[in-house]
Length: 210
Ligand SMILES: N[C@@H](CCC(=O)N[C@@H](CS)C(=O)NCC(=O)O)C(=O)O
Image (tube, rainbow, N blue to C red):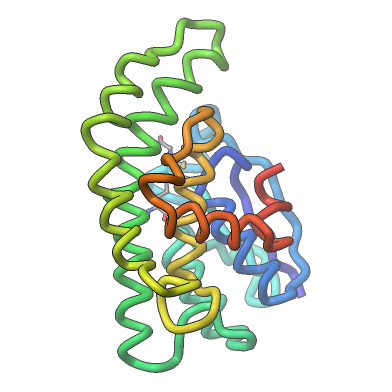
């Protein structure tokens, strides 16, 4: 079996795939790929130049898939057990919704508007824009926390009663938020705090957030 995940640990989308593979107990290699520094061959692998990529040499030496959602569906089809995408139709729909919400609404606000201005400048010796990050934390994130707080009312996991792609997708976005030093106040969002503690106690999540 020859699975390789290409990307960087700072990417929630890259970690999403590593967690899914770990939950499925599948062996895989990782290859560091920095989307901001990669050469022209990266454009050939993924015309939108984003990580992660999955290589699967079981298929062929040049089989490459971009996009974490596509990769997750591919892995689920190829290795259905244990399921990370629910098989029950209603739960399947709900799980894909949470994945979409995390990958777009959460990633735009947390990734682009908090993580990037706080962390990216520091990597190149520049001043971080904490004011921009704080503005998003104050003005945009509470509605995300409120929504998820409600969705988690009386539940351990977002969909059904087991850990799924819905939980992974949401939790990796909060992982990037935690990298900046901010976490939602557990007094105001207790369900969310409990959820993140449960996800954090998973070996697959802890491993990918070292
Ligand atoms: N929808 C894509 C999003 C991937 C994505 O945005 N990756 C970021 C890293 S977290 C990236 O490669 N950014 C490169 C860039 O913006 O140029 C997925 O699910 O894989």
